[in-house]
Image 1 (cartoon, rainbow, N blue to C red):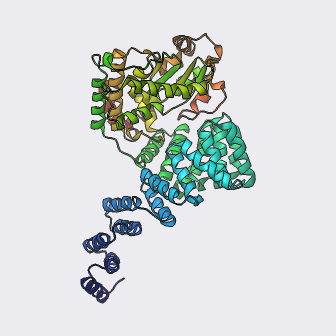
Image 2: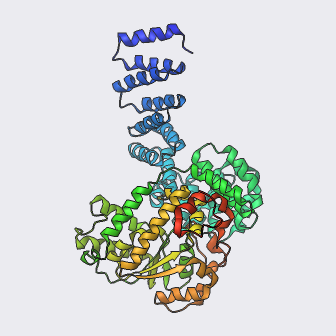
Image 3: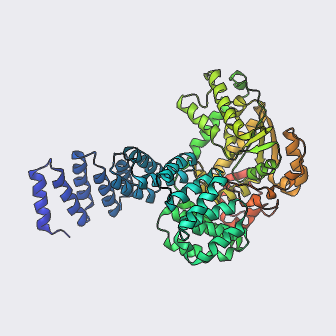
Length: 572
């Protein structure tokens, strides 16, 4: 603690040398030691007025503001530190703080710049790859990790991360030997155990995943990913009680918001599987409160209004269309958790269908159009741009699909972009998956999504998003000349034989009885529903929401006429 005489000396020093940043820095630290908020802020203002490009000082100011409970100011100073060039060790400190605050985009940007300036720093490249993987940019992560593996082929951490990201890319034949090699070198490594168990789990072998993890049960709580993986395996094997002690210990250990969020979602799933539905919903609520990102319902509603106006019945005939004439693309769309994964898995059993999974091509095209001020008003879009975009998509997917008559793109949010899809692929097939609105929204709320899913973190936001989704898809059905087939999840699980035949007929394919056994198909599923599609088609998810009804006031109120009857509904 600074004494009054010390503070008087420091004040005299800044009066004598008002352009000396070090004098102001000593004063700022003294003011902080006395918890003098206004004095600390003023002194820091002078320090950074004189040295505005020093990221270390911005980081120190952020830490000081945090101690004074100036949360918004601390966050702003941290972001400023991240925007400046940093030496590698300082960059790691700033990134650590950014991750604590959930500022993933800023952390990725800083790491990308620092790795470019210091390519020799393998630790930073590894950390960047981990961030890219967290944001589901697997190709970019694989590029960095393959370089690290080439440079250090015996490093089990690099091998394990590379194997894990290859699994994310569905390159499981490459991933498995890499992970096995890494585990031989480091059999107790928790990240490696997690990556290998995930691969086993997602290739339909949860029993082997259990056998791999069970000997380490006492240590599983020390790694959030490993604890969550163990929980998923236990739930699949109908042993959720085995997961709960590990998850409770993991929650006590998790000190970062992203780690706690990950474990809380797994905790909710295990509680739910053990019949503790109220406790499960509370765990999901805590998890969603820890997720970064925000959603503006009013802005989204306005965006949907613009889409409807830009693709109106009057505007559509005037818009340029691609001239590919290709009938192979099949777009499986709907709300997340509406049955899109089940439909894709059914079709993937057909020998003439290539299942490409959840692709981000269409959103990427939309982003490019936005950059050129062509979205969503496309009346000035040159026809050659539409042709070029369609051709690049078809070339890439055609190479993957080989001689298959159809290939699927199962990104649910492509429901927002069916107007563009109609221009790019006029001969495409669209399968629109529908499910009970409340079941859909509750399932979204219970899922640990990454990417553009901030609306799933609050029940009221989910209701707003669903209303707009319903309004937009009703418009698409009215105005688009696309071939669109609706699949209602409740009908599909009640009458799988007739509904599956209708799906195959819609695509113009010969019947194949393998489509009736999607759970027997081998291969890796990388959507949120990977565990569900490993099971024979089941009906237990129909009206699942009633288990949690007393928690759903904001959702039921927000859905209005799209929800169930109001009788017995809790107040919002």
